[in-house]
Length: 250
Image (tube, rainbow, N blue to C red; front, side, top):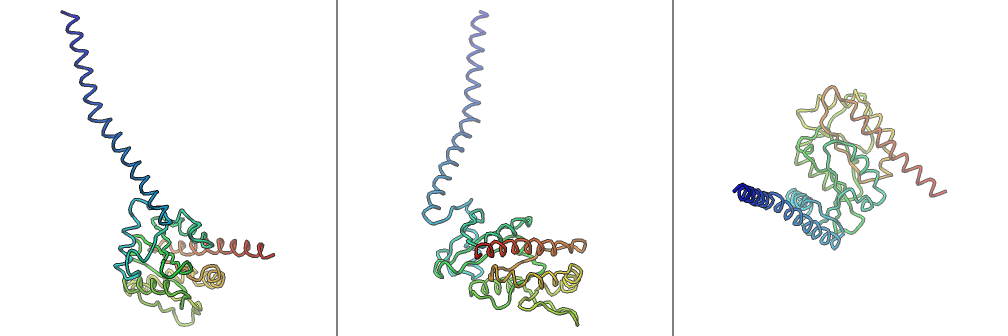
């Protein structure tokens, strides 16, 4: 009788173990297999289109660009993840610069209809929902960049920021912010020395990338140095780029 009870209990435990395995482990293995198959399909589709999709974010981005009027349709543009820096050609330093800014997402938008020379660096993140200060080159060489900048300005109701009397503006650059943030933006600009930084690196920046623009993220009154840090990083990177170019020429 005891042996029968032991045998019965053993069978019961084995049955429960099989049930638990079927309920927990098997669904997890099936889900993992589906994820791997989906990743293979995405990589295959991406290689045919010249880019590798990532979690469907490229579709959301293209739809947003269509909604803003930056591109006419989803088929009119292609999105490259910034980890593929070779897609940016000589502009790889811009990806590295922006990658150091927390909470920013960086995308390189390529307009197929316009050819390979018209590329736009798009900074897409929740920070653009409330830009604090925007600085960009005036009269950009490429219409695609100017169109993007105008759309961002209109979308967020940005207005030109007037400097105090006697302060020399930076030629070729315009500063814009929200109407209700003018006073605070002006205080941060004057205290951080951003104008002097722009004057020092303006020529180098435009020669390195005439299509680059910077959206400086919201700053608290105690963090005005973040602007100078951003511009200082750009100055170092651009200087290194110029030095490397001079070495190649020599």
